[in-house]
Length: 347
Image 1 (tube, rainbow, N blue to C red):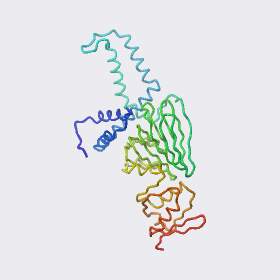
Image 2: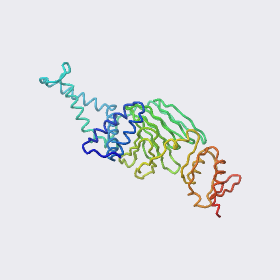
Image 3: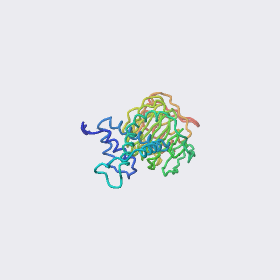
Image 4: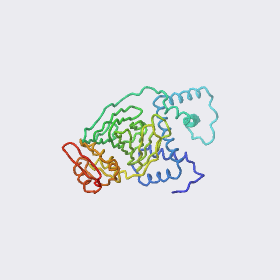
């Protein structure tokens, strides 16, 4: 871990990183690694970067609402009634002093905006949003599909999933009421890309990330590339900043947990028709197979549900999975026409 430089300006650095993230430059692994190292130095770095990204979104809302344009028009109107002052030395000929006055006004706006961002994000009424795209996509059990959205972003839906797409001139919003989807986001700094799932909003910054809404209400977010923010839409607490390789499990009404480091490629292996488990509870593994096929499984012994399972499996071939499970030793299997019973082989 790099030592903290007490002389560095955290907010200045955060603004620089935010500009880079919003610029839409091609993915740069070295730059991404430098950002991750900077984030690890001090937790305040992540908070500052998150604040800068929130500020950018707030300014975009003001811009589309006409608030900033109205302010600049008022400033210009006031300037028209002021006699020109002598031009200060050093001003480029032809530019005059008015641009500098306007720049100062805009800087003043930027200075006070952080005090406005909180109320704005919490729910300050805004002008009506013109909806330009509204559609829904879904998959049946065992089905998978990839869609290219109107902005060029790509979404891949896993089995039994549904998304509701609503794009406007202000934001790109997707609701994931059930299932799992991998989003590869097209860069557009003027319209944040937001996925709402399980009482949380996940805001992307030119990135790829996976969102899985489980049947029990928990939501798993895994970042494959880039940066995302996760925010509790009810508690309105400070958002969590996640970067590539981070995974977080969000529970309704619970505080945002600390992200865990994972192999993101394995987390989205489902896209290539594989389920990869590394020490997962057998009960959770069985739940995953239930998503792909209609299987009835009963745990005769509660301890069997807690057995750790590792391996790579075809989600559509549950028979092969249970055959492998039967060979493991500690698990016994009884089968009949419509039911599978799992029990301890030591019974």
